[in-house]
Length: 306
Image 1 (spheres, rainbow, N blue to C red):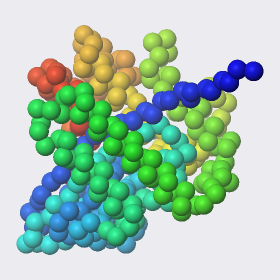
Image 2 (tube, rainbow, N blue to C red; image 1 turned 90 degrees about the vertical axis):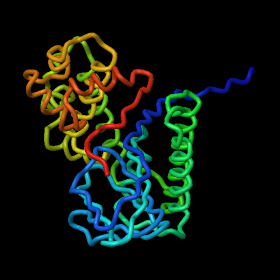
Image 3 (spheres, helix red, strand yellow; image 1 turned 135 degrees about the vertical axis):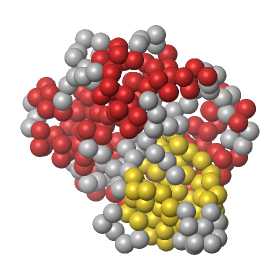
């Protein structure tokens, strides 16, 4: 019998944005915010206070890190009124539901001390990415962007190993959701993506429409989705619509009115307000920026970042 070795289908869904290294002055602070994705922060010099709503403040010193879970309201400020603070930051997301849930349940919203393996791996990954980005002229080169993706994938691999150590011999029973709940949440996510991106469906849909198509109650669908993905269905829907709007504004010849219709907005005015909430700029401003920087494909503006 001939040997047959299958190669798995891979769809990483890797998404990263808002990454930077920044030195801020004494007394610096940033207003309360939340993101639909994971946020990694590593302190290089100085001391930062991260306030996560409904938790005691976290004080991060040089070498310390924090992973902030999706949908977490938080503020950051320099702990000193005189000394500067230098930190590195990255917002990222990926497709693997099980790893995402393990990271959220076991690693996020807590101080990661400088001497820990997780802090060392986090600092090393961000340092390598920052070093690759020091020359802005090279950021658009394929080899540089590919190397950044490789670094992030290696970091996710390290997070997978670390969560393994936290829950040795893990099984689905150790996760905060069951196999059935994981499948239900995945079905919901796929249905949302299909409705957002399909040309044959009305783009103006609600989460109730999604649940109805899957024969689920709204309450159960909402609870399961939030439990598995760590964000509400509405946040997920908005993220999918924003990513579609970005693509349409960047690469299609559609008018802004047509883009508004294609993402389910009632009119251009409502779409423009929502898009500015998502990206910090109007659709017109975004399109002009992309046209001016066409040689650099980037999604580096999603919401507000430190």
